[in-house]
Length: 101
Length: 168
Image (cartoon, rainbow over the protein chains, first blue to last red):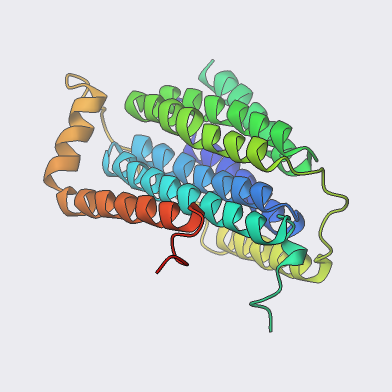
């Protein structure tokens, strides 16, 4: 346990920012969902690092819950993508402007 | 030695995460996310979270990513032409995040609290202690999690099944 917890925080921040940039920059809906997975994994790394740092297992339990939410998000998100593709034959976010003001 | 192991995992994680965003083909994107999931699991093992490492591989790499690959193969999308043009928004958000990080690091010093004195719980396995915590302290959130999964399952079926809403 010689790795300082700051290293894990920097790694987690990097992965989170990469995911954020992916959400902002890409147009493919599937890639946007994959970038959201990146951000969830960044928070999970942080949770586990601090759980190990403080010797408290609650952080690992919260990773468990984050994983549950990720699974639910993937199921609903991919179902929405399939429904959108069925109506518009496209998963480019530029083609969907119904909710834009 | 532990630092070298961490640096290897961190380098591969950051590179695979960048590839997810950079690569044009969604299949390659999903496969590089698979590489990242495996290395995050390796990081969990070095942090003495063996149960989460197994869950990471089984659930993330085994279930979630396979679902992504199914959808990618099912839709058969063409490679996208260009990246999105959201320069001002991305720049604003990046600057805000960066200044926030710098301010938090500089103004209050960079202390994360004292580490745990000793690693208790070495006698009890990682899975066993997590299970005890999950079924005692976090019992109610655990039940809520099962409810969330049920709602997601019903929602996915209703959204993706053709004609289930129009028939009434």
